[in-house]
Amino acid sequence: MASDKNIVILISGTGSNMAAIVRAAQQEDWRQRFGARVAAVVSNKADAKGLAFAREQGIAAAVVDHQRFESRELFDAELARVIDAHRPALVVLAGFMRILTPGFVARYAGRLLNIHPSLLPAFPGLHTHRRALEAGCRFAGTTVHQVTAELDHGPILDQAVVPVLPGDTAETLAARVLTQEHLLYPRAIARLLPRL
Image (cartoon, rainbow, N blue to C red; front, side, top):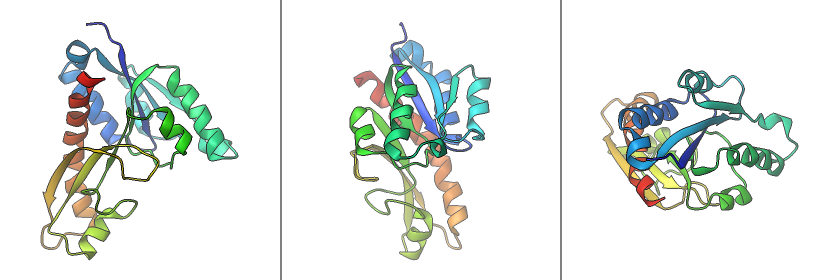
């Protein structure tokens, strides 16, 4: 099957979810099954460790440094230009630590995904694990959702649940949730690809 479903992944740091997606795409042969491939990885930080992993896998890697732009709109415009060069069927946020403008979100409506480390709609935004512990939650987890203009409120595609254990800290809970993120995100993307 010819590859016509390009995936562009946006990262800001180590890119562990990006790496999980790339490995799943290789191991599950998304190119043959869905005509899909990870075409590029883009970061807003030149020192993001995930860029090296992408290059090692033969994936195009680019940097659009948000600090070089006077406004979010200008940054998002350049980011979109770099993304669009790869004709994406899907744009995947994987630890991309920037709030995107409504115009950017609208440009990729229905094909812009994010993963959030809580069971949305609970605990949108930051410090999710600490907030879950403070609230006395017995379960936590992670959510893959489509991105809309309202932060962490888009349609939910898939979720994974983990127990909150006695003695958990935000760090131990985060580590347990992250292992599920690495399984959930590739699975959610693979389910979505046939419909694109």
